[in-house]
Image (spheres, one colour):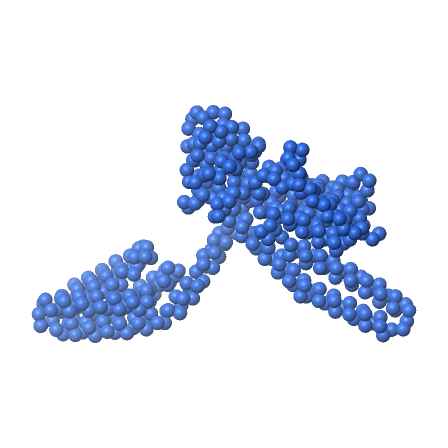
Amino acid sequence: MLSTHQPGILWRVTTAARVFVLALALGRVLSAGEARGVLLPFVAVVLVATVTCVLEREVPDRLLVWLPLVEGVLVSALLSSNQEAGEYVLVYLAVPAVVGGLRHGWLAVLNTTLAGAVTLLSVTINIGSSSAHVAEAGLFWLGIGLGTGLLAAWQTRALRELIDARAPLVEAHRLLVQLQALAHENEVGFDSSGASEQLGSALLDRVEATRAAVFARHRDGSLVLLWSRGAIEGLEDAAASVTDEVVATPETLCVPVMSEDRVIAVAVLGDLLSWHGEPEMTATRVAASHALRLDTALIFDDVRGLAASEERHRIAREMHDGVAQELVALGYAVDEISSVTEEAQTRELSMLLRAEVTRVVSELRFSIFDLRHDLAGHSLSASLTDYANTVGMQAGLRVHLTLDEAGPPLPSRVQTEILRIAQEAIGNVRRHSRAANLWVLWTTDGDGQCLRIEDDGVGNAAPRAQHYGLHTMRERAEHIGATLTVEDRHGGGTVVEMSSRSPEPHHRKEKIVAYHHRHARR
């Protein structure tokens, strides 16, 4: 309905229509010198119009559809019961149908007109034949209202459809503007890791326990670890059984985090030191106080991830369709110069230029591949394997992969940041190291992570002016609470390592996958 999305505009339009008709009726009454005879019905109609305007401003949208009909019935009953009203005030009988057409469409026009006509005829029949002229004039104005209301409904139908189609975008825009304002004012953080850490820390402050974890619950019921302190063994299994009520066992206390009657996350406390002081109620209150911020952060993470992915793909398309094609055309032009010239120096320079164009095109293709490569529903191990394998084959590197991905899955934002760090590190190996071997190690137990990229190249990976690769990797690592180190490798080469409470591989069985490609040409 149009009123759902533009209540202020419609209220002003319908109120202006009522005021105009009432002013017209008052002017006709005063000009005819019959104000005394129709004063009471006129005041009654003004009162009905005023109350209707107030209700249109205050009543919920779902009930507004009945207001024109009720207004039409009341006005018909008032004017048909007073013969002195004459044709001067009866003009208002057209208003309810017009309002129904503007607000609710042709069905409201028909219902309002029919109800007004039935009321008008019923009252005049009860009064007698002396009021026949009132019924005739009233039916005339009801007919005018019917025609005008149907015309208004037809004219506003396209506008209603347009507004209905835009309504989700309008609401999304309004919410994004509010989020932008809050973000600039630093009143709220949009980081699910920070929000979940605050929730978990608040729970541990209020409830005595040795370990805790916060899991986000997706709409399909799957759980993703957001934050933990201490060992998480058994906590995820406990969280999986939680619905919308607190679940307490001798080992754990599971608290659902609710937002609009939906479980968005589950906080689990393990190894409680004391059950005194009603820990269930305390944990429930803490979870409720943090629910809105966590839900906002999770939604923002999802929107930010979709926007970032779309932007990366857009840049990749523009690079492929723009700069890449122009460089290829430049390469053809260089080939043409080399084929038509007979000077040895010109041919040599053209060959050097052709080699440089080929190198730039190759780098550009790698950049496009980096932009398009993401998790895409795969695990981080699978994405790392695919990326390292592809780069190794194209760069002539022998690739050695060691993958040990255990425990609950990491949040998608964390996985994406780790993948981008790995891409930058592997890209540096390909571009600068002149290595023959590339080692990629990735281990996680859901609590800690370790990513290590090694090569046996020339080493000397210190930051260089106007190159921000290492700085960007450190920023990404800090964003997920990890540290990044860059060191020389024993025996030559470079080691880039990102770690966060590193897992202990000797407690778990490692999954090792090795790919061997041809040696790089030195």
